[in-house]
Image (cartoon, rainbow, N blue to C red):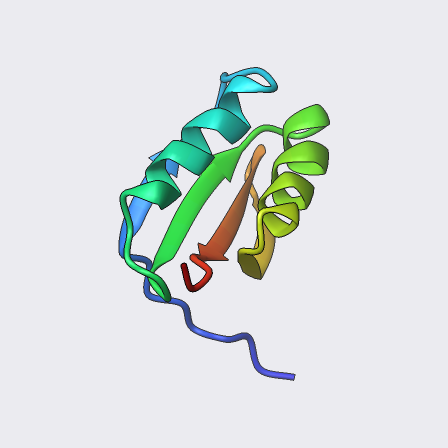
Length: 82
């Protein structure tokens, strides 16, 4: 299966940001974006990568892709329709 190319509209580097602040910052950034736009987020291992994607999906947004790069995670979030 080929990996889907994702062209993010914005980037949020939340490495070093603890829960729940990383989700709050993600949510606030998504609120400034248009439906269908993609936000790329960098998250630390552990609690952030466990909590943020789940919380984002609970808000109705779509996780397009998750990957582990070096020592952090990259997730691509597509903003839900309002």
